[in-house]
Image 1 (cartoon, rainbow, N blue to C red):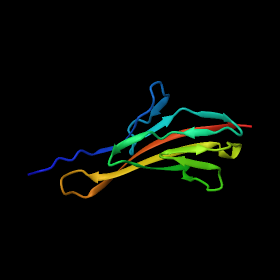
Image 2 (image 1 turned 180 degrees about the vertical axis):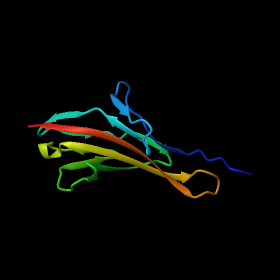
Image 3 (image 1 turned 45 degrees about the vertical axis):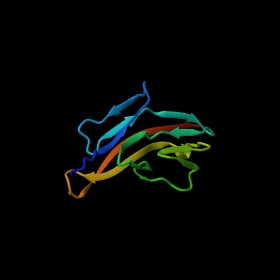
Image 4 (image 1 turned 90 degrees about the vertical axis):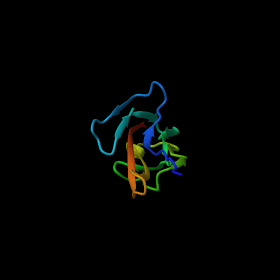
Length: 124
């Protein structure tokens, strides 16, 4: 008896009407979301609505580096929340979603990624 397994690399599930741009031929796949503008002191939520199987793990970077722990941030599942936004939080935030699975029966697990960038502009 054989078993069937269905795997899916990470994909974005953006709300209807979302503004985004997919970077052609990017490996791993890369999507650029709309610019988020907010005022100082606002609560800013950056979404990373990814799904796949196995469930992707999402991590965040700011301007290509791990997020500074001194920033006032919170995590809500795969989403990133900038609490009490300030000008030092301006930048490009990147959600990197990862999952791994074999490409063929009894093969080694292969990593799969999706990159979702969102620029944040905080006005004082």
